[in-house]
Length: 164
Image (cartoon, rainbow, N blue to C red; front, top):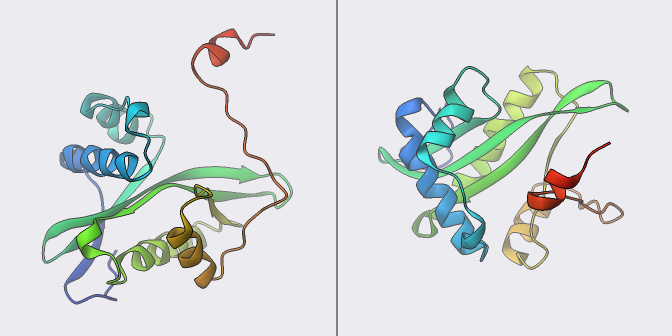
């Protein structure tokens, strides 16, 4: 897989040897989102969940001049209404020094191609409501905000205590 919207840009599927780079991107994204305190991921956990016996997500890494410049982590979900799988983009991050060069757009285009190849019915993601640059970027690509939906999450003790 490759995209060429920026001179020397390559987008490749991550391999197990990229785990340290992936974790570095996750930490940088968390810092940007003011959520560093929530990062519990380790290289070992990522190696197991991304490249182990049960791979639960996939990663693309954007390289500019052979240096990692950004990444996208995604996984499949399913739409009962469409009767088809979808792709959920969990993380999209481009190094600040490389923003504005088309790397984020190239990563999204690559994931959209994968979604079409896999006959997915949709590609979706969440964005923090204060992240105006990202919201404007996504809207500029034709994405629609689902303002009538509320995202819920159960984690930690609440997840432990959720029993039938």
